[in-house]
Image (cartoon, rainbow, N blue to C red; front, side, top):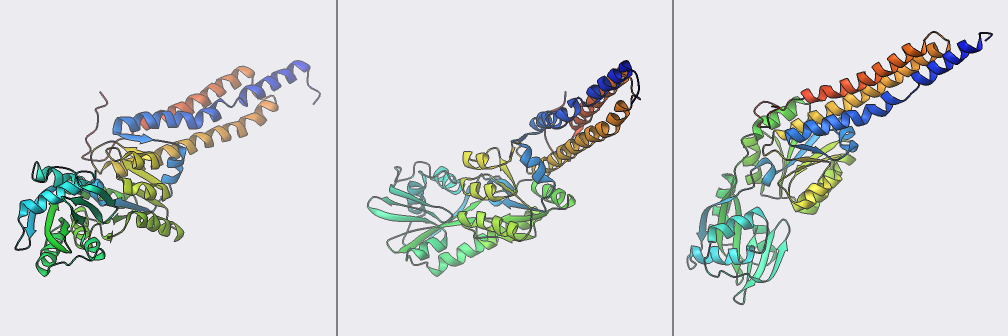
Length: 378
């Protein structure tokens, strides 16, 4: 342009300094590092950037019941039997079958039975996901599970057991029937407790513009009782393990962006099928592996907290990238025109990187929702 070589060199040097992609390179990792650190203090583990992008668009949160909305620590409430069978016999046979299972229902039955006879394991144990289990005890095949399972296996359900089951389920209990020799002989009611944090967490999800749905393999009556206690209006019950993933896929095919919260082996496919999978940290390895976010705090309020943190992190990354692009777009022409001294350009480049880091550090001020119990910031 007819200017001296020294001026051209100065302008070229200023362009190189301004165009240094430090801010651009720091935009995403700086926000991620701060968010992961803050999330860890709140009991939220972010597994990857995909979770952050997915969080901004979800509109539906599907919640598993046992171990998620409820504590998952079931206790035996009551046993009823037909006239010619003893309660301890029913409990002992059920425990013999369930000792090989890790399901919360099986754990409750086994704990309640203690050393009740027969104290050993059933032969030929077979778990029937979403329905129950079966095994051979002292030469007799015993089936333990939902009424549907016993009917499918051709066992008769006495009217008194059916009526008692219905009454227990309306009260919010989980009920399993125990049968052998072609007939149901007893029913066991177990109670699970809705997490104290569940109503507040559901209300917070609604405040975030999300639609909560309770998804469970339990009976409609039990599911409705738990949903009412948690403040959830929409319930999908009696869903088999494979049906959970199909339900999530159906929602996505209908145009919804779905977050799934679960903890069990049965929830793994549904977590993988969801737009955003959130696994309760006390859950199984299958659920944790399939999820995008792992929730380690023992209250349901961590679910809206995790979504808010993910959204805040994604927003911070977008702002960092926006600033880095706009800064370069505005400053490079000024440097090329010789209007910026290289020393000023160096200062501006440093300030740009400092802005990106400072904006990312704002995530350290992220706070969990009201009532959450988290580690103190010290």
